[in-house]
Length: 485
Image (cartoon, rainbow, N blue to C red; front, side):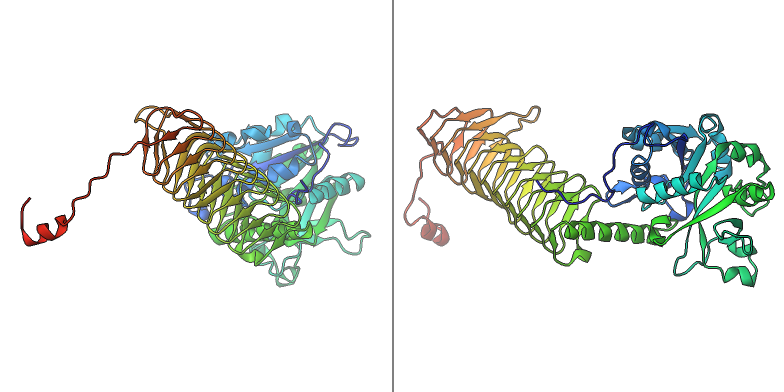
């Protein structure tokens, strides 16, 4: 399968050799409440692109250093944050009281002091790229900086602290200080370069001077931003490195900003897929999660949703309003309008829908058909088998080239336990059949339409399980005229 590019550029896993001469750690700020989101959930667990904000940041960081060298500083709802990200393998530091980013880093002093350098990321800045993290690291080390600030120049710098670079003293990469907007002079407000809140530090001077941060601000918190001025006054080297992609350093303090980040990530994902050979009509209408993979020459129609870890092969067509989550779709598969597919596997050449529902555990064989308003759950539909209309198939094994008629139901639940239905190859199940599990229908067997099957059917047998029809001529006329008999 030729896979579309992932949102994060694939990289060789970081090792002690790839980290270079200096031991480098990454600390991720993940302790805040996110009050302005007006949510009872931790800020960093809000999602864009199908993953929590913090998961995106960890994924980027993990492509630069080993997971053993990534520390998430948690506080508000710490245990929930740990549980949600435990699968990433990162380590955690607890900040019991949320007293600002300066206090957060100071809480990690014991673990970070063992490194020569630390890079500080924000857990609510999910679009940061591994390439940018590497640039900050390499720039910081190459220039022998004590502190490096990642900056950018957004279209509107309002609300952000301005970075004041030194002038007339050689390199303009050196920083004089950072001034918050409220404290800035009119001249300083004309500066458009802003502080991203992403920093690299040499740990020795950082922890030597971090206790000098004061809380003389409206929030009475310790701001890591103040380290630029503190280190500068101590004669240390403070540098700035700019990124020309402002969106990658933007956070989400409001729901509207969360939506903007989600839109930016999904737009970028669609662009990557299209660059890799996928046709997407009206990409602005499609929802494609960050970890979705789609192979070349597949077509996505408007209003498609591809979620979670879905993988789609080549030369497929996914028609409008279909929702596919955590599923694996082979090559040359057509997913017709309005299908819902979750945690299922579909082999090459299958035809689905319109309006079918594949529930978790469904396996649709090569060239098989699952049609209009058919629901499956924990079903294996063999190669070339067909269930084309208005059917429920649950806990069933269905052989190759078997035909399931309209309205068929596998009665798999007795109120306490689930039971299996097994149907062999080349069998024919007539319309409106009810198969009461556990039951087995042999290869080549026929089940008459309208039958209720409660016993096993041998191979090549015909099973009929319906009562004899009774017809009473003239009955309706007599009833309407009130004549008895």
